[in-house]
Every structure is written in C-alpha cells, then in structure tokens.
Image (tube, rainbow, N blue to C red; front, side, top):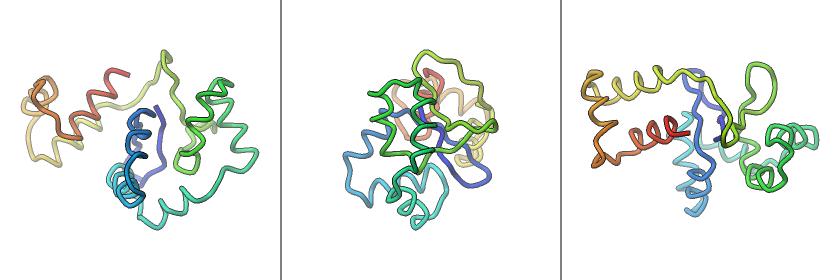
Length: 144
C-alpha cells in the first residue's frame, strides 16, 4: 500500500495492486483517478508523474520497500506521488506489516459525501452487493 501526497485534508493510502490496475488505463484516466483520490490538480499530478526520483529519494524508497528489489521496481513508477510520513521515510506499507491510521476520518468523509449516518455507511460496508469505489477502497484498507 502506498501513501500518496494529497491536499491538506486528505492522506490516501491506496493498495499498490489497485494503482497498477489504474495504470492499465489511458493517461488521462489515470490522472483523473489520482485527482479524485488525492484532491491535487491535474497539472501537479502530471508533473509528479513525469519526474523520476532523485537518487537519494530512490534509495529512501528502496529502504521503505525493505530493500526488496521486486517491490521497489513496482513502486518506482509512483515515486513522485508518494508522501513522506511524519518521520521522513516514504509511506510504503509492506504486506504483513502493521499500519496505524485514522480510519474514522475515512468513514467520516464517506458519510459526509453521501450525506448519510453511521448505520447506513456500516450497512454499505458490509453489503457484498455494494461495489462503489469509496466503499471498495475502505474495504481494501480494512483488509490490508
């Protein structure tokens, strides 16, 4: 899972596999997906995607990937999008590792966007028929 740089009121963490699926789309669709997830402008996102990481940043990403060359190779295309955590390293949450985050804020954002209360949001989350993007992302984050 990667923590993406975003606007001040968001801190999205998106599974790497989900980002890789989005990368199968055309560039404009990718940028639009990232704009929705991060709140950043399309220009800022295009610049972030066009820039390759500086050697120091690439080394920090490699360390965040646990020096796993295969994972590092998968993460590098997204290097310009990944935010640093409060202690400095890029936010790369490896499989099997623990991550402490504020899930309450994500649920709150969904409830505000849909103008519904906690019971309705909880019912959506546990309804297997519900496949909308925000609910699917929240499920993926809970499963990670």
